Image (tube, rainbow, N blue to C red; front, side, top):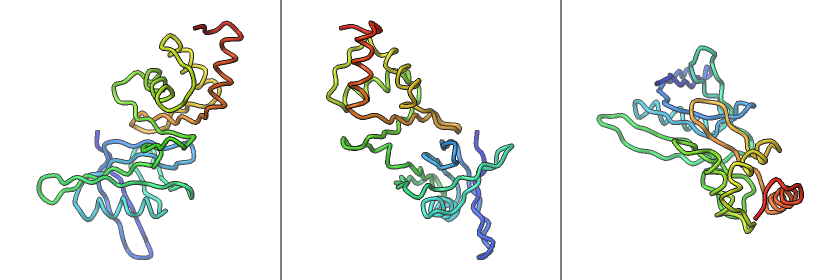
Length: 181
């Protein structure tokens, strides 16, 4: 379902609207993902405002004001639509994780969240994980606050771990008999 997304700057007399088909943000209203479509100039105004630290509103039953975190860095991905329409996706850098970052953002489309987290851990960290631990690992990471689901219309998970945390959780699980090789 499309919702309006709006940027207003009263000092400059701007009131720009476009449409969003999906977004994800945290409990502090910091955006992690925003898909915007519409007229070329409107889309660019909304996405530019967001990445430059201006408030962008999503017009739902309860207006959601998205505000960039001071530490957030974004990428804008663009694609032309028929006519003079444009589609842009604003995505926080955590979606483009490099091996040395302790935090990843995972977009959950039609995948099992537990499998997505397991595969990310298995491919990103030099810790022993076996497929039988998939559900245990996901539950343990969620219960300890290392996996958090963002708010919004798109399912996005924030995975915040490092090798030390994973080693500790796995050692504890083996020691308690919760998992085994």
